[in-house]
Length: 218
Image 1 (cartoon, rainbow, N blue to C red):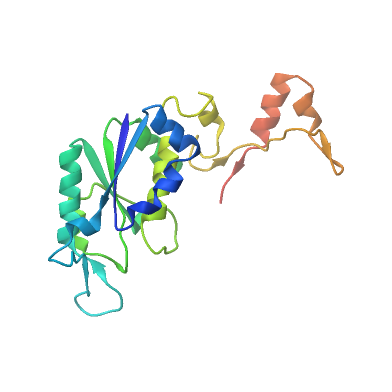
Image 2: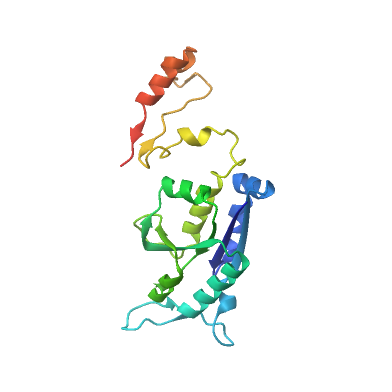
């Protein structure tokens, strides 16, 4: 079973997504266990403060290092063999090969979701990996965390219906190759026909057509 702990100021946003479709199936099949730590519970003082203004000036507020570290330490105590992942625009761009590695390795995961203007840089001393899901800015790390959970979960054993389905998907081979086009009934729709090769029953020709219609993403 893959265990994923998520550290967030808004853990309630995850449950509607993680309780549907393949993610629910994974939890029901005991392939996945997801738990949450509310960062506010590790805040400082009676008001549970988690943020402050940046040294040097500037707009926005930064997450303080102390609450983040307390939350990480609590998560590590719960599941010691966990890697800590920080979702940040400054991280490595997340790709399918990363999802495959995180799904197959036998360590568990702690996902840290920043908010506000960012985080105190010193927290990186307790982080193993940093990932970005693209060159744009979101209001927090919750959506990137959902992306990681979804992409990892569908690669776990006994989650997808077909064992070979993952191997023909986009990006499986090299993080670049896109899956071939696919069609289903009806054979003709508003004058648009399914390619004849896909319905002639010749599997060698079908494989050749599919391989020739793979594309490289940009």
